Amino acid sequence: LVGDRLVVRKDGNAKTSQDIKAEIKNFADLPLSQTTAKGLEASHFKSLTDIQLKAVPRALKGRDILGAAKTGSGKTLSFLIPVLENLYRQKWTELDGLGALIISPTRELAIQIFEVLRKIGRYHTFSAGLVIGGRSLQEERERLGRMNILVCTPGRMLQHMDQTAAFEVDNLQMLVLDEADRIMDMGFQMSVDAIIEHLPKQRQTMLFSATQTKKVSDLARLSLRDPEYVAVDEGA
Ligand code: ADP
Ligand code: MG
Image (cartoon, rainbow, N blue to C red; front, side, top):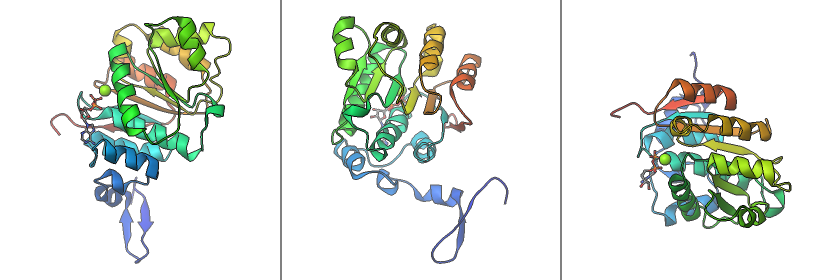
């Protein structure tokens, strides 16, 4: 058996990881904390979409993820669930500082991600914030140091990393690059490269994109370590 893993069940029958994946259908079938499970239920999320089925179990095992799936396929939960679970498992508190950074190409998309995070993360005690500009740098700066999870746009984030002396990213566990194709198309390559330069190398990274372009694969090479490539076929 090549390229698959054999697992021996208690009843003695061997089955492959492929079989196990086929048994996951609902969020309740995943090894999630009660806190996340309750948040998903309260938000009326019950079964996983295709990209979530492929990305979430692998991300929960700590793998870097390179995900491709078209708009509307459910990429947001594919990274928000692993973010919450990763920090929860590490018993992350306010004192631990920034644990996860989510980069989005536009303010509007960042706000959407933040709203979903607020919904499914409602029973967690993590602090979360938006760094998208629109208010004074000083106002954002004061709140930054207390945040465990930040959703940001590249330009504004880099501004803080360069100018906010007390802003610590040394503890960061997870980086998410959402809509990586648009991040690159909008000319944020240098900003994102510079942000990544500031971050610890030892971390989990998830990169999602609607399309796979040369620029996206360049960014993936720079930011991911031995990633699992997960894609949902067109028309699936
Ligand atoms: P993408 O980022 O791939 O464009 P989104 O994460 O924004 O997709 O999700 C698209 C829509 O699908 C949203 O309205 C979201 O609430 C819904 N959705 C995502 N995952 C699920 C799910 N597991 N069950 C039901 N609806 C879902
Ligand atoms: Mg999206």
